[in-house]
Length: 159
Image (cartoon, rainbow, N blue to C red; front, side):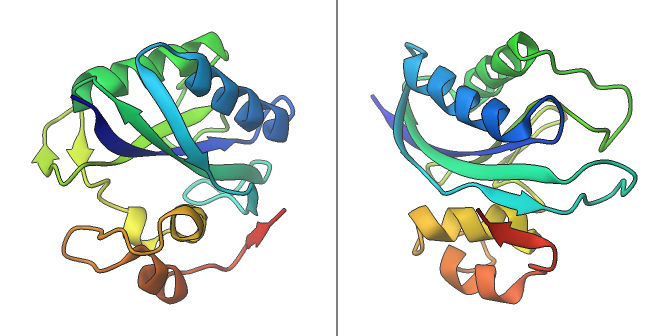
């Protein structure tokens, strides 16, 4: 049975635009994943740790037979193939892939929380998500298109 999920993509090292575009191609060519649609690319000022380059962000809609945790592990594998390192939280990164939503699943484990707990307040997630799925419901927070207008979009611009 296929499940609908949304993934956030981001990069701010080693040609970030190419990293995000290559990650979308990798997702599309991964046997367990089917890329349905991808947002435009967005340039974003860093959040959390400011002393780093701007990011390129996007959101992808996929279908998969994988469980949420298996999907997360598949995304980690893709990150690792791109050279992802995790020296400290919010560090600059070659590629960051996050599961935002997986059907209507709500889980909270040490490894994965769904829906993504901070997505509703992040312009670099909500603007691209609203572009491809404006009426997707984000837990108890509301619909993507409404949230995209309410969250902090400062420093986020569509390429």
